Length: 448
Figure 1: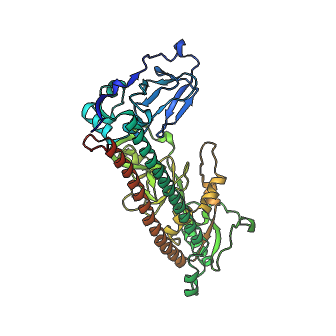
Figure 2 (figure 1 turned 60 degrees about the horizontal axis):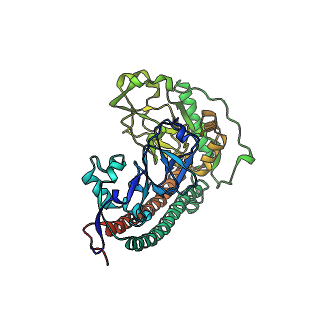
């Protein structure tokens, strides 16, 4: 390996000793490290900590014991002493033996992770402390060689940043494209040709009449309660012009059922079990799919007690706080599960395509209505009045199906493009790891 030598890290890195109680006068008034991000940037906080502390001085190399292999390491460049919790460690170092930026790259390399796995019980999952790092023996080149390798790393990192920036830009464009597809769908632009080819379709006005008959029958059978009349839609409320045969209506007109999940006080810690019946909270709704959590399950007795909140096929579960675009249709797999405290469950009319309803619901146009009128200071909160009063562009039933087919075909193309972008991101990560592997591996022949 030429001028590469086996060297213990403790020969060039020296721990700054000293542990302090949070109220120790020796560190009184000093700010502390809140975190070191994965780019090595320090985030300083004034808020005190209840944890024992260490001292960090200008020029010290500081390592986060929890995220060191991800890049949470840096040289503190401030002018005043600061503190850090004992989850960090602070070091002075011999600049004639080690280039700190070179060493930072080493700590992100597969070789360092390999050393930890071989010599530290628990490996990389261990909170890395000085007693773990300092005894490690590594292959270390001379300081001039470190500088040359560092220059190579920085060149590759610049290319990596530019690539990731471009990939992030592509993801942003894909997100905008998805929303543009939904917007053109709900404005009728995607199905302009379809309407020309299907001129005799029953208009949506007659569809509303059928929905009213359906709802009146459910009221007569005492399956639902009679709604208060919703206000008419003014011209000022209509954000865009609809095609012939479409109508604006309020969402409440289209819903046969609107229910909230149980109040938090109705569920207790003792109600939760493992391998039980899943609860559906907003966190369980991912990309229009309901994903159960093993930590949020109840037994049959609890479901029986809360039977009015049990979900049935064809109902929608929607988030009532936070990300209000979360919405999913209950399928046969989720039938019998329980609506959680953070969700609503609704039942649209049988004369509405469920897939069309969900496309409108997740569009920026519709979400804007919900968020600008939502209640809550820290996060958006939805209620029945807001949802029922939101306006909805309703096409003829047959056109709803045509829109869904067109949208899903276009979104499938977006999925393919996103898969390609994600694959490129993975390749970028693998390339950086390969560069680090080549530079630091003990088995790799180093260039002279």
